[in-house]
Length: 316
Image 1 (cartoon, rainbow, N blue to C red):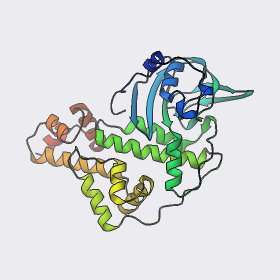
Image 2 (cartoon, rainbow, N blue to C red; image 1 turned 180 degrees about the vertical axis):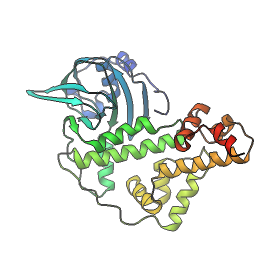
Image 3 (cartoon, rainbow, N blue to C red; image 1 turned 90 degrees about the horizontal axis):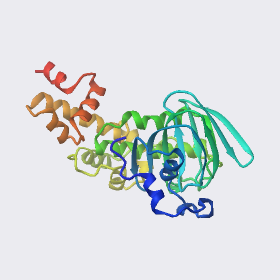
Image 4 (cartoon, one colour; image 1 turned 60 degrees about the vertical axis):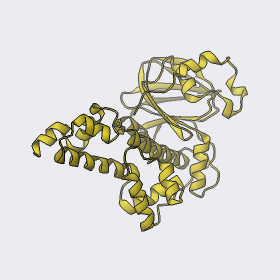
């Protein structure tokens, strides 16, 4: 993810007395990342959070034979590689599946189940508050969402691809990475409402883009310096729209998402600075908001196929 985890989930288990999580209201139950740390007996390799929308974590963990207690958030899992047997027992029911790319697992907030995983594995997890599902449903002018369904290695390439993209696309630029995660969380929430809810919701295609003056304001904000607030909330507020409707209308107007537009704009800025100035690569990386020269070089190479220094040398 874009930056290291700000807290150690295992630490939270040391400062609060152990209580029966099932006896608590959902909002008072253990946060999902803390419960996952307890069960998996480790901490995530990377984790990025955007309160109050949700969080994404990437884990490598060993074999697991334990009960996952009720959590405050919904947990959605996707598997980047390999093939691993999963066994899940909820009450008297048993679900057996194979964790692999293209499938997802859903643990609804407040549910509890016994898990048996016999080998080490990698997993990407989304922690999604119920409030995010309710916000997306409300912004889409739909009724309150039904309960999420339990899924164990359920075939869903769309949701799997969306969640796995969190590990592949983040590139060490705080503004870009935050905007990407916010869009991704909203997309995943929309997908869960449509495909993994007890009362599935149909989201109609976008009908019409942003008004010209509204689009111009959004682009002016995206073109601001690297310290400007280009969060999805700020862009949507400027437009007088919800996050859900702003993203759909922006893409209808431009053909790309706000994150993709900003990414391409920063890339064009980088090429111009490399071509027209003598600024060092490290100073260009800093000016464009990248956390390091290495992060900038990796992002630049992903789009051009070559490092910034080589690209500059060939164009001079």
